[in-house]
Image (cartoon, rainbow, N blue to C red; front, side, top):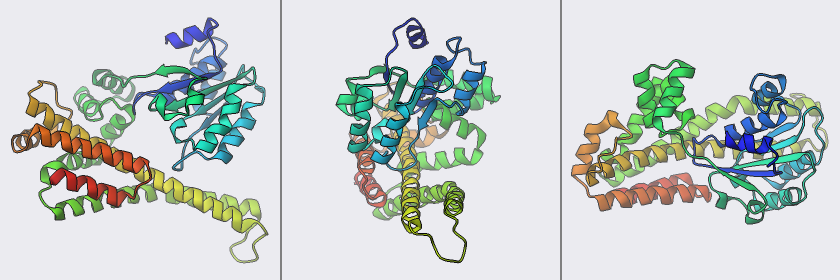
Length: 361
């Protein structure tokens, strides 16, 4: 990448803001850049330094991911202390914040001082969907890198080359995932995921009444919560066991002073993680719904563009014939409004019901 070459030629800076839509590879690009900076050969991908960064085991590369709804000030202060250290084994002390748009205002302000006056060997990589999602004072002190979602043909070729997916399936899932490599891989590997996606895409065509609205909203929220529980139950149990071990807590017996507070903080973080995962699951459903309505609008306007969901072409064409482009645009607007409401911490059930009511009214 040109950005790697520029850094290697001396155009380095201490803070980078990497933006792009879901599937554009913001975090992956940040990790790859980190590997290139730590590598004595500017990113060979084969040496010990590159492998450690790519595997997430390099001592001088810290990745802050977001398990909860936001990144709080306590986490930010820990990162700032880390950023003040000189590298121990590599060339740089690198901090990657995967979801900088989820920094609370207090957390962003805590990072600001470190970004304004960085240690000479510290590099920050902040990842967010849009530059405007990040505090303006941080944005003004960072070099902006804007990524684009890869074309479907590129994703399909990648799946064939890297994962051995047959070309027809690869092309289908690349189109259905709208260029998101992670979702394309999940669809290619899981026939159940493909069936679920078809059910979601068909929702707008099936809803005719208020009862349909309530049923669809309840089903989506319940399934999202179930998936969050499946992902979190085992991890929650491991974290609880680790906490009890560190405090010397037995199954029965007196709890040490301070343990109750530590347990409360853990459960709060775990609840936040479950909410985050459930809302991410709901957001994926909303993206699928938008892709279906985009296809409907394309048919209505006779754009001639390939459908994102060619496997349900007949349903899309039938639905397009019994509604109008104006109504389709209003439905797309309702979905966009729902996504904003969920991002603002609205109750998922109410947000979904409101969206579907607007779509069928």
